[in-house]
Amino acid sequence: MCSTALAVSWDTGAVTAKTDLHIKLEDEARLLSTKPASETTMKKRLNARSQEKHHLNTGGRKRFHANENPVDVMKSTIPALLPGLYMHVDATKLDNRLSPSVIAALPFQCPTLYVAVDSCTEDPIGRALVFGAQARDPLGILIRDILFRQKRLHRYVMRDGGCEYGAWFFAFCDAVGMSMIKPPVGDPKKNSRAENAIGRTNQLLSHRLLGSTKPDQAGRKVDNRFKSYHTARLLFADVVREVDQTLFGDMPATPTGNNISSPQEKAEVLRDAFGPRGIEQPYDRDFLILTSPIIDRKISADGTRGYRHEGRLYRCPRLSELLRYGHADQKRRDCVDPTVMYCKFGNEWVTAHGSDSILLEESNELDRLFRSMMGQTIRSENAQIRKEISRKRINRVERANAAAPATAHLPIVEKATNDDDLFAFDGFGDADLTPFPKRKI
Image 1 (spheres, rainbow, N blue to C red):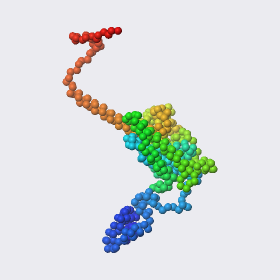
Image 2 (image 1 turned 30 degrees about the horizontal axis):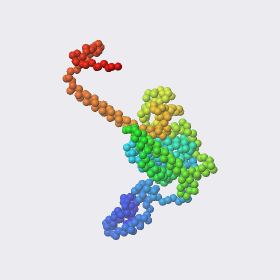
Image 3 (image 1 turned 90 degrees about the vertical axis):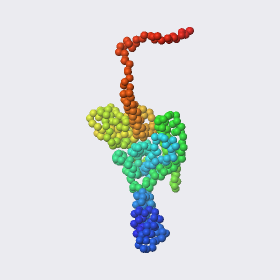
Image 4 (image 1 turned 135 degrees about the vertical axis):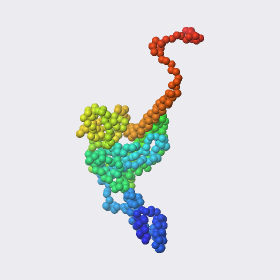
């Protein structure tokens, strides 16, 4: 009877506590007029059983993989033998303690960190630090960062099942020759290289920026709404700088476990012995287009002037010329610079710019990225401000219209109809006015 109760109640997940399971066992024994097993005996039999069904039914695949039996080392997949072949990609929210208390009053969300780690050396090879509602831009930023730092792309990428891996990323991998490997659902340990890197980053940075007052002090120089955005931009720049120092300064020089060399030293030895590996990819306009996510929703063209998208009008002479004959087959907005849009007409790509591209021309890449991530929040706040101003204007008009009947009976002074009457002056009449005294010079 004990084995039956375990199979029915424990394995199916109907009962999750061992104490509750023994109570259920006693109730069933009482109905059958038999003596139940003691709680100690029940726990011994429970420990002797496989817990896979219980973990799967109570915690899903994630708990199942977290508690599954280890695989024989001789049968497990080994890391890549050379750098530049296989990378792990994962993302996480940065530790909340990174932000000082002033962050609660700012339009700035907790940043999300995307990290790519080389499978062979465990050396971080690229990062994307973003915040806001964007889901697809970080992957394009990450790929650009990897190529900028490594001068090559890896041939294989281990990724999770996030929604950001859309059709455009599959098309990018096909175009450059990358292959994606997806671990089992709910089994993040298969992506342990990246999991370990982002965990160490959070641990190393959790106290480093705690209580930082530099962004707050800089923000006090300005007032009201601009203060919030100015302070948030400075804080974002501080976080990016510290993350880069940790990922590409501290971690590559730090040996771990039983390794006799650091990741940086191991990478240098292997590259000297076997040469650089990976996919050669020029950092050109075609690469920028490939790493820019596709605009899925329909956007309208403003006649032949250009396309309107997220409060900007993207235009250029060639785009205006092509819009006379039809619409673009595909549109992409740059993942870093929000003022750049790529439009495809047949086999031709046209680069269009927003009206504020000249203002951002002299700004650095970090400022453009910050402005892109804050775009949705700024547009939403501006819409609320415009709505509030319109509401006040409507209220003023309604009050004026309501007050009109109350003053309709009052006489109105007739206006002069002749221009000469406007300038007619007959003196001050009988008024006794004393002229200004003459000043002695």
